Amino acid sequence: MSAETADGADATAEAAGRRREQHGWYFYDFACSVYSTSVLTVFLGPYLTEVAKAAADADGFVHPLGIPVRAGSFFAYSVSASVILAVLVMPLVGALADRTGRKKPLLAAAAYVGAAATAGMFFLDGHRYLLGGFLLIVANASLAVSMVLYNAYLPQIAEPAERDSVSSRGWAFGYSSGALVLVLNLVLFQGHDAFAISQGTAVRICLASAGVWWGAFTVIPLRRLRDRAVAREGGLVPVGQGWRQLISTLKDMRRHPLTLSFLLAYLVYNDGVQTVISQASVYGSEELGLEQSTLIVAVLLVQVLAVAGALGMGRLARTYGAKRVILGSLAAWTLTLAAGYFLPAGAPVWFFVLASAIGLVLGGSQALSRSLFSHLVPRGKEAEYFSAYEMSDRGMSWLGPLVFGLTYQVTGSYREAIISLVIFFGLGFVLLARVPVRRAVEAAGNPVPDRI
Image 1 (tube, rainbow, N blue to C red):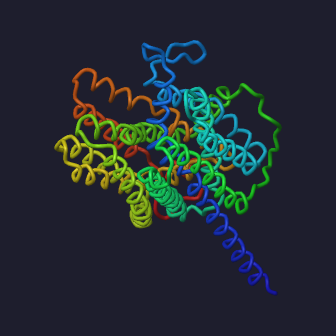
Image 2 (image 1 turned 90 degrees about the vertical axis):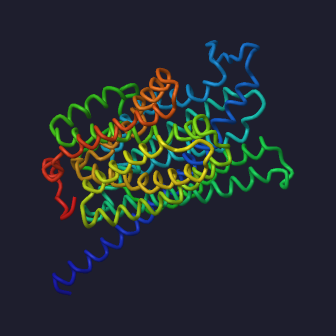
Image 3 (image 1 turned 60 degrees about the vertical axis):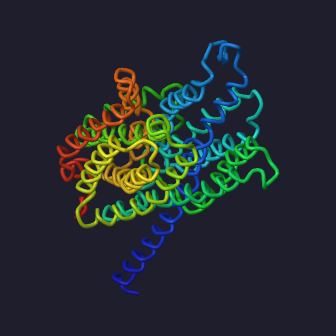
C-alpha cells in the first residue's frame, strides 16, 4: 500500500470516528434537555411551591435551617442556591478535566447524580418541601457541571469548519426531546383522571420520568465519546479551590483579551435571553391574563420551533458566518420584545405568534454562540474555559431578572419591564460587533475557518 493510500485510509477512518462521536454527543442534549423543559420550566416551580405552602405556618412561612422563608419564594431561593453551588464546582471540575483528560467519567458522574436527583422527585409529596429543595439544588448544579464537560468536547470532535452545524444539531436534538417528553407529560397531566391517578401523582411521575429519560439516554454519549491523552497529567484539584481556579482561568484569559471580549458580549446578551425565557410566562399570566394551559402550549411551541431555528441558523452560518448570524438574531430578539410590548391582553393567538418568534431565534443564537466560542479557546483548556462560559450561561444571569423586577416595582407595569430588556440585546450587539473574531481565533492559536 502506498503512503498516499495509507494516508487516505487514515483520514477516512478518522472522519468516521469523528462522526460517531458527534452522533453520540448529540444525544447528551437529547438526554438532559427534558429536565430544563419539563422540570424547571413547567412542573417543578408550581408544584414545589404548593408543597411548601402546605408545610407553611399560619403566616405563610417555612423554616429551612431555622430561617423564615415565605413559601412562595422557596423555589426561587432553591434555584439561587443551586447556582451558587454550581459556581463553586464548575471551575474545579473544568480544571480537573483538563489536567487529567478524563472528561467522560466526570460527565458520567455529573449526569447520573443529576438524573438520580430528578428521579427522586417522585417522592416529593405532603410537606416534604426540604426534600424538594435539596433535590432541585443537586439536579440543577449537576446539570450545569455536566454541560461544562459536554461543551468542552465540541472543539475535540468537530473540525473548525463544521462546528456551527454540529453545535446547532446538538441544540436541535435537545429541543426535539424536550418537546416530545413534554407532549407525553401533558397527556398524563391533562388526563390524570383517565389514568386513575391524582393530579399531584401525575406531576410526580412527570418529574421522575425526566430523570429516567436523562439517565437512560446518557448511555449513548458515554459509549461513543472518548477521552484524549493530555501532555500534562495532573492530580486531583484540592477541594475548596473552585473560586481560585476561576480567578486563575480569568487571569489566563487576560492573555487572550479578544476571547474575554466575546465572553463579555455573550454574558450581556445571554442575560437578556435567559430573562425572557424565565419571565415570559409571568408576563403572559399577569399582564396578558392568559391561562396556564395557554402558557404550556406556548412553551411546547417554543421547543418545536427552536429545532427548526437551530438547524436553519446553522445553515445560514455556513454562508454568512456565525458572528453575522448571531448579530442578526440579536436584532430579531429586539424586534420581538418591541412586539411583545404591544401585545393585547386576553389574546392567546398573538402570544403564540410571539412564542414562535422566540423559538425561531432561541436555539440558533445559543448554538452559534457555543460554536463561535469554541474557536476562541486555547487548545488543552477546553473544559476550563467552558466552565467560565457555562457560568456566563447559568451562573451570572442575575442582572436581567433584577432589571425586570426593579422596572416593574417602579412602574407597576410588566409591559415596561419586558421592554427594559432591550438594553441587553442592544448592548450585546454593540459589544459583539466590536470583536474581531478572525484575529481572536488566530490569537487563541486555532485555525481560522473560511466562514466565521
